Image (cartoon, rainbow, N blue to C red; front, side, top):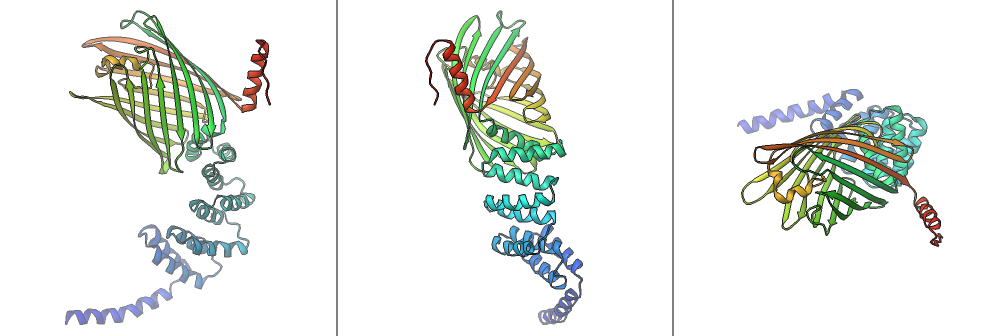
Length: 434
């Protein structure tokens, strides 16, 4: 009896509900459609409500744009295109229309069409940060890094604290600097642990390729009053819009100053809301292998970049930990920043990694430092300092002071050939450049 009564109530109320909905204004139906989409993620119902609203107000542009967006979210690109193309025939100039339409094509990997839409939108709204940022992302995804960088520079000229633009600028810079030669010098002084100061010099060449940067580096070290060399190769292949890899290896015949072998792999992810994450490993081989597992999380916020990284080294007895926190403040570009670091333990990326051979990394280490990077045209200069307080023997601590100086020159490949020709000619060696 109760079931029949329930059906009777539904039969009475359902027509009333439909009648009430039919009497709603376009704005009221639009509000309901937005609630269904944003709060309930009920895109099917949202589409129905948006269509009802358009029946009452066919020229209500905001509802049409919203309907196109919901079709996009509902993974119905053809219906979304039908809505946006109809709006285009009306010569719509709303900023939101171009953002919604270009986003549809961007998310469906139709980069040429997305660029066409964005260029038209920017002709009406040249100062639109949203359109410029989308253009930067589309060109980055399409591997047109020069155009992506131009869009980023336009955004930062309008708003230097744009978080997403600063985040993307760092990633794009790895590809726009096609070629770079760098030299890095590190000086270390110990008050107790070692009698002799350490000197490390590294010279590297980086080449940006369509799939990512490749770096070859040669290192010279003078440690314990002994000389040694090391060769390194690193690559940063890009896997997708979201993921890219770090792959690195090194070899040295001067074990003790450097590990004999070093390998490393990390998977990086560009996460929503300007976050980024990493997980990977590093392996150092002296007389035995040391395996270290790493993870990090980073966040861009306006002109700032925050990062926390850990290295975890398991063995048969315990697990050793290393933690480092980094903050950078970008001043005018991806290569201009002031940075600060604080942490514990030894990182395999440090020039002190040869200390890992004797497992002193399991003793307590505190470090704090700062760095400053700045550019002058195509030249990048860096200066950094780091202080370490290391327990190098149980209950025995010593201090270490580091100074690091760096210089990088970005250039096109033509200038590299020209530079080689000048050097070889002056030395009397014949060299022909085609």
